[in-house]
Image (cartoon, rainbow, N blue to C red; front, side, top):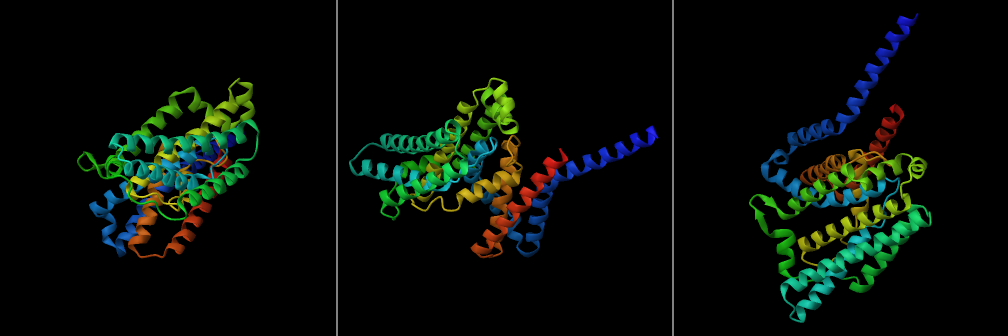
Length: 335
């Protein structure tokens, strides 16, 4: 009888281990299958030029998905990310164009754009972090309020119109300049940011604490961690990453756009969750964000090549998010 129990348990463990591996490999396998399926109709999808294009496109989204990851690890999210990007784009562009018209030198223009953009992002992060961590208000409510505030600011200060004539030196530094042949500046920045975040999350007290706060807030409190401070810093880091991404997008477009962050909130959350960052908190990392970002970018790129309409793309992305959340729940149930 005892032997039968052990044999049954061993078989269950093997089946569970196989399912766990299938869940881990599901996204890479899906990406391969998707690309091969698209290749049958559009061979350009696997061309070197298109692969490079996908990597360059991913360099922006990986910053925004990493921003969401910082707060999702703590069981939160940031609905204001998209409108924060828009407000930063407009504000930094207005400052730079104003200084350029006054004859300021290039280094002043770049410094002013960075200070305004990162400063605005820091204010949004501190605002969200204060109300979520110190006052205990639900992240949905706080960041929904921030969304509307930033949207109103972006529209008001720009008059609802793009701010053109961003200085060429800004675009040169953060978009079309060349440091290493064959490697775009946005992609280089994304790689450096990912390496920095990997170190932060895996080799610092702050990073490891975010996982504990997300997994078990009470255990984090009993362990003596400054949970409120770390939670507030997570929202600050989220907004600073979003701010840097906003400045990169502004350099790419060459203008301050009040609608620049339109779909970024959905796409950033989607990329993080699809990659394996759990909405239940405490699970995920830079690798998950990279995989999720590549999947979302590849999906969008494939649909563009197949000339699928933008609204249909949004429907498909929504379906993928639902499936990703289901797989996340399944992983937690298995755990």
